[in-house]
Length: 434
Image (cartoon, rainbow, N blue to C red):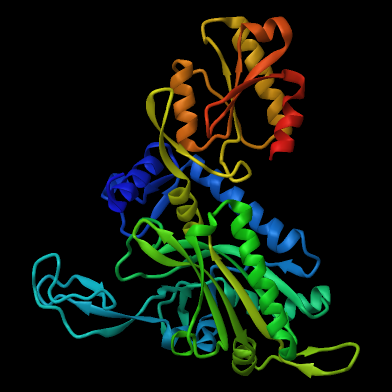
């Protein structure tokens, strides 16, 4: 690639061509800031969510889960400060009325050359109505973050499960923000998924738990295959932190369009629980059974965007090289993250004995490995290239030697090397490799 812009365009093109991500409402001209996920995109997201749950929930014994509603009582967003403060600076063209984020320096409108207005604040929440009567009391909002759904279920979780401090509540879910200027593919969109965890701790112990979660963020990055050299930890200064945070770390990634925030780790203090307790009138304190001490727990929040994770993986995995004297494109995805792990081929599609044997192996592998496909479309070279482009780590070919000695050809995506392996050993080999 000659430029980072060309590289980004190639990634977006591949994502659509191979069925990872499509522009939202495309046949009607699209809807800015929205994206639809194709089959491979859905599988990739599921792989990421599975690894997140394994890392942040299942391999621990101190984290519970919740799945809160997308639409909540408007009082939630008043208490959290979103109604009054969830804003971005906006400028408007006086000629064509197009709007732009004020953090993008503009001397004139890029669309028509008209004069732009002075910046003003724009609330990014999507407003909606609940019920059949349109009145002020029916106003609600699509949630702009998943965190508040965790905080308003703090008491329910404590009453139902009686967890001992410290403990966490985790959630994966959709969030919606009426972005003024959606841009950079999946990076800034109006609808996206978050993977968030609120970890409740004693106020005197937040620092040691913050460090534990900082290390966990790095372990997660390595687990899913984000390269170290593209991943940066940035301490957020006091003037740039949220008013309730005493410490925040941004984990930034080198996207083709620049170094941008990928994840965040914030110490939120007792801000959220205290605000909800005050506005709702419900006691959200925690009582230590050993000491009898009653207090509002403090919170450490590892926050990860699922869509940005997909984008980071696609951009870091996208590789152009030369194999066998031909140029090719492949996605260097970690096998545990790849949407398709194994592709099974018959060497020739017009030989029934090969096709039948390949189908039998395909059905066997499906019972043991998640993400197996059967492919007999085109010659063997085209099949390899197609699987390379979607990041499939291994291709298995049933050929005439298979009929004689029971071995198959196992081809590695990254370097194109091939080896013979007994067919009966293949499921265990793949499981071990994953």
